[in-house]
View 1 (cartoon, helix red, strand yellow):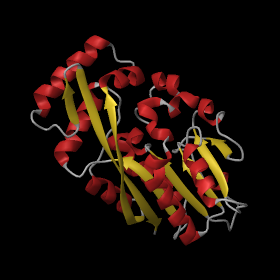
View 2 (cartoon, rainbow, N blue to C red):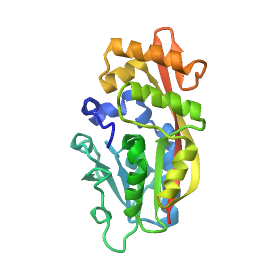
View 3 (cartoon, rainbow, N blue to C red):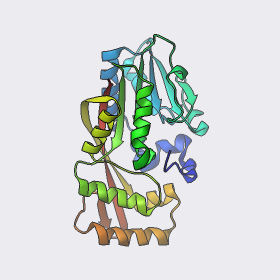
Length: 259
């Protein structure tokens, strides 16, 4: 996937649950996604729920906790990084595989139902590969099954442009769509968007960006000056501080029905 830089590996494992103020390990923050996954599971009764790019299994652990008691559903964390999967708790199943290489038969037997979910993964595809990768995920599902994903996207194009400028200046390869663009891509890929929910925005400081993307202080200062010059009064995504800046990224949870 585009933007999957090797320097991010230093955050793998349990460290990932601590970054960004613990955003990705906060049950309250994850609630809109978990609610949407459980609602979709009630609709289609899958044999397997698979979390693509599931890291250390936090999302599926929340799903398991909310289901409670014995469950016929198998929960499988799918990630390309063995360092992440090694920290998945039992009884989660694991599958080391990229989203691009995923095939239905890796997860379910003939006649079994499948539900896919993912959080904060689609921006790794990049602008050019987004449509193809969405179509690839659709190919793993049968009509009537669901993909539930939480993805960074923006209501307004000016906010989208600000966010993309930040990540372009850091040369990450990541790209963020607007809400409307993302819905169009999902529908072109064979899905019907049946439910959308807002999830809490993610604030990231310049120092956190430096750590994650291995950007030196001089380069980050230069990026900050460029953002100040280009973003002007658009201060919803780019938020200047006396000692640097913060980027605020908006999230939406989309429940997508395979057609």
